[in-house]
Image (tube, rainbow, N blue to C red; front, side, top):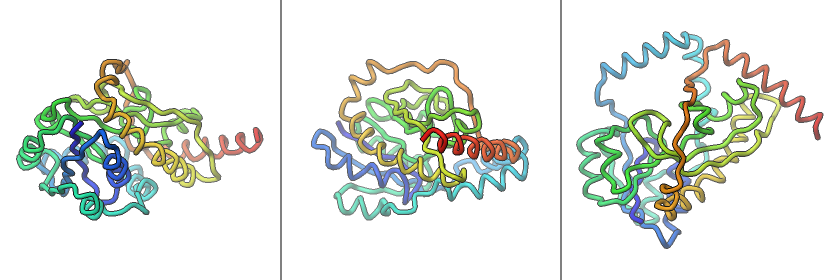
Length: 259
């Protein structure tokens, strides 16, 4: 299986996954594409940001910026240095859905594309590999489409989290489910610590999961599950965030009592 990786982060999940894929003798990583983050349609991008801020409020937006650090990969290697170590070609087009990205995908002649840390990917990109592209969503689908990991199950009073590898289609987090991992949330005294510790659990599982999906893709695709109607989430409002904090404290106390 010839695999191409598309990522928008120098230090992210792609850096976790690449070494494991390169060590799988049944896979060939033909290229890594690091989109530099330019915005193809600036007006559309700004309009989307304004509408989102209107929906969640200014305090929600500012709190969302503060929370980004909770989800940051702080101890992974730069993807460029990893590509050099594993002798994988690295290209840096200006943005995810650029003409340069499409040309790089066509030149790669990849069987399967992996989206590791990107926003919306256009059909003109994800349809180029022979089997299309797959994405990692750091929550359980279809229940938590668009959701940031861990916080929304806590908001809903659910004590389970996980991640989903799914086929990319024209919408966000709605494609066929190829692989899913479920496990109980490990609660800690603060919401921040709970998020960070559970992300470490996910990241310990994801590289081998991607290696398995790539190696057995055709069988998994034949057995893939169509998503039922799900619920879409976004950055929480400040009031939703306060409920997450309260629920996390209550769930942590219950977890102590159950030990």
